[in-house]
Image (cartoon, rainbow, N blue to C red):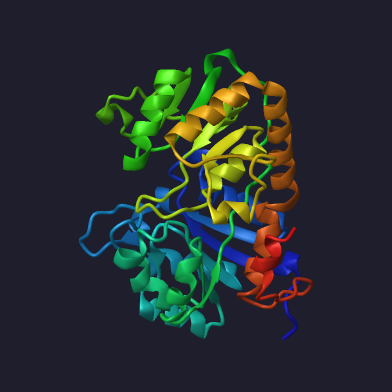
Length: 348
């Protein structure tokens, strides 16, 4: 059979958007739609009765697989007749028998693992075999997943400039330093120091447990306003287990017009030139010195801010990533298969 053109490709997209409109899974969905493919999405947050955890607490796949109920999903899938079904994060998977049934209908199954390495042992190691193709955000886990059966690849980070873009600043969000994110052990002392030395606004979960005032949560347009009102935005990029990572927030914040300060790492160097497109720090002392310097040199800060945004919106966007991802799952007319596409992604 002749492969479908992008406008003919049908994709059934399953995911949850619990962080609101700026949720990564929601932003990836917008980027997928921007490619022109036909998409039906299934929001797991609104359909909890379509999920089973076999007696385990439901925590979006953090500690156990989340099984999709065939009686809820199959009628929708059969009506749409997709070429590909995507399970995006959340520990989502069809049970082996159901996955086999869908494969028998020549429907390809793709999963995206966005929380490695923490979710591998309790969750994704148990569901990887149910998919034809798997993408993980941690390069060291690509070969590990291949041993489970699926074709596995690294998923590079990207952003959605349709949502993340500059907006006018608002006085209530004006500050020297903005921190958006949940508390992790390695973030507590640096944030305390930021609070002691600069006008710092902190948003996110559990900070008050450590004596740090949190201003609550920001969603949607509020995030954009805060990023464009702060002089700098700090992102602590290590995972909970301490692994260096390139958080999607780095690209999102840059696209929104923020000046980003984050941990230096070889992984980050694949995306950005430190000191030219982004500001990097090595430890708390270095973090404080870098922030103080750029607060005192706003013209230099603005050059980096603009260069970072231009790099992201011209190279690292989800509508550029999706055609490469989908072409590794099924043949698409006009989207050539390139198993080496990730390497080329970083050479732009």
